[in-house]
Image (tube, rainbow, N blue to C red; front, side, top):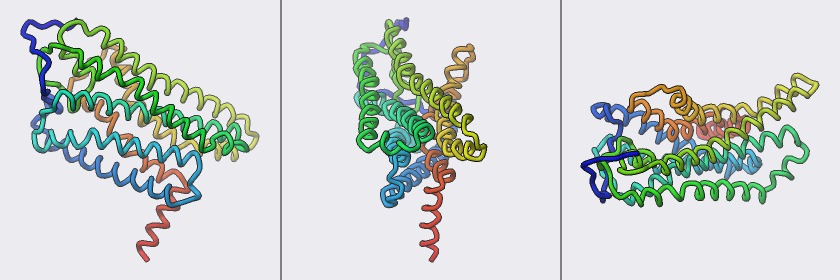
Length: 314
């Protein structure tokens, strides 16, 4: 129950605090944020161009990677420019409607990315368990249906967020102690009973990230079971190596979430600025690292990049 004696009506604008407690360091924070933004845009755009141009990469695993790059580009485009505006120009004001838009689109792209990682785990499962039927099972029409399912789930799960937030009538303050309009950050400064909002927030985590992580673990359990049944150790190692890039991306994507959840379960209370920095890592590091990991660890991508570099030198 959030109650307050000196409440204010629903404001026309909120003020984003950025990283509370570290306002004097906003200029320094802007440097890595800007570099992450540039690297993410260049890396994911390069991935998309290479997959588009190279016909040999028009395979399910690379088409899923292209979907991941599109979502990554969208995610950083709706988060980083606003953060840089806060850090560079002290542009902290955000209209209520723009705040509602942020609390829908930012987590929606995050949930979409989680869904695509699940689809990529299924891709690796099919490639190892049913190699001869791989292109048949993951035909283009199936990939389209998977993409639509990922999109539909994100929209269905996150649409209630701005609707519920719009119904909040009074607030303790108009200052949001965050660098973007996070749903729970807005709910926590609201007055009145917010228990339904907390339940909804937990449901979003469970039905999206929790569901995906569970089935990703299940997929890799079955993959390991199949690999250990392969008589040749060399063939088994080669089969498992095809999952290396995806496992790196999964670890990077879910680690901050798992860390935050475990910290709350164990009762470890982090300083607010540490929690906000970790939350920002959800949306910044994976989109930057994904093209670097796949570019470095995927043979076809690496060969294509090296070929382009040789052409430029000549």
